[in-house]
Length: 221
Image (cartoon, rainbow, N blue to C red; front, top):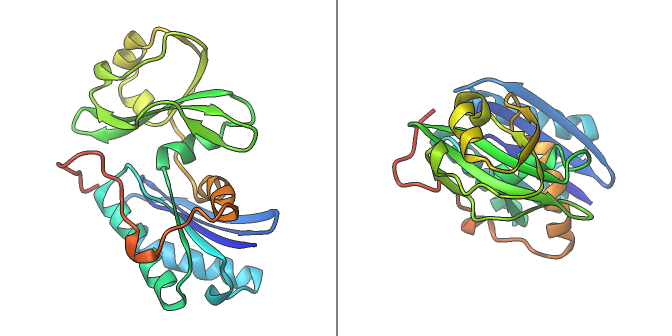
């Protein structure tokens, strides 16, 4: 199994190549440089593995929510790589990809990514035997309007917890065990979530690949 994954929804730009059980990744925190970085990352990973695009079984991408420019970069790259070879595509929630990084240590993860405009992208996730699974409908809202859980213990992840810590904590009635406000969704986590979908045949045609903005007034950042 050969799977390429990209994630460009936030300030973090990353690409990962999963070959069977091995995954290699390139990552850089570089706001507004995703256009310049992502294709060289992909080329480097393929060269490192001695793999060509035509050999890929699938291409996964973080579909957002996230920054307008970053999501358009992801769609453009996926279309350019997958279309000539009719490679199946797997869209993955960027919020779920962030939660996935902590699946081994934390059974419940509350993700808040700074959405600018005084809002956060919000999602609640629990660990399953293989991957993180969403517990609520992902949304964009003001920190004081989150749908916070009333039970369980939660790990808080994402830049929203740094930007809006006070209103989020005030609304969050359940126990928060720890917080990491300096983490981002990564391509390696996108790949981890995409693998079972690819194995199950839950893919889409590249022409159907769409970003997930969650709101009409997107932010170009």
